[in-house]
Length: 311
Image (cartoon, rainbow, N blue to C red; front, side, top):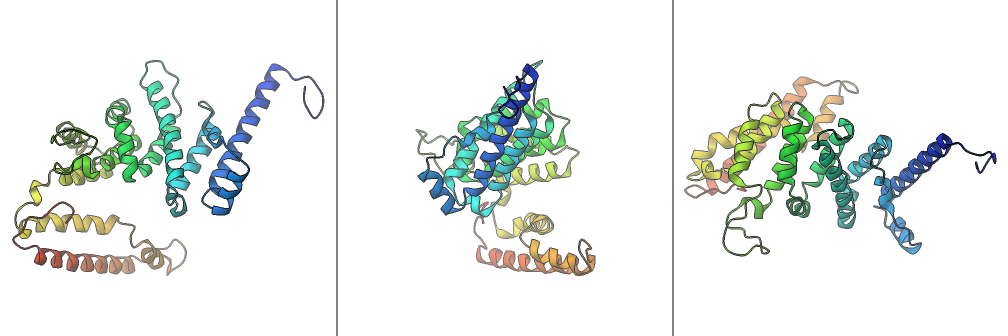
């Protein structure tokens, strides 16, 4: 019966009521997620034994709930206050990987009822943010992310957004020191065999195939990752790597958000949203000049020595 009117509910009415209650619970959990970075709120939640905040992601079929909960997780992962809470990072990563695992398994099954592409894209972009964290890179390796995402990229070959998200995740995982550098050993692995992950030869072949993508972002990221993994090009005297460093510096200068505030100020001088191209070009020239000076100092310092990728 309806608790307000007292009328008996039909099957459709019961289903609608359950859906409304499920969404209300999702919104409540997401609201509490947003409050977790505040120490006072966390203290109150512990005091009152508030738990099961994972119910925000309990529904596997409600597109609205998934969009709200995953979008909230993405906001927290991209916010400085959220990044300062390792326990929150682990909590969100475990839930997001379950959603990703559930969706990819269904999507890769012939005839499976997969989620809308928008939800998969949002999930992948959120996991890509997580993959920037060192601990998460190790967790993604344990999750066998290479095998899973390689298959997903093959199935969604025509979807540029998914291809870029897959590349961002795998490139981040590959940059972990124990996954990338032969002499940095994983203490959990016996012996002296290099523990490259994803498997180096197979991954480099896959990256090379990305260089022909129609998306310039995919091409650039694949090229930069190949450069980092195949660091033989950086060995030798500093002068030999000068042209490569110049190219990377120019690309970084045009794509970095490190000077976002200055660029935004320059763009807003003539009114909101109106960019003064001359002013922006001056900022970029200054960025390039400062980076070039730093690079020159580095080259002078390491003349005659082998340069590592980090250097």
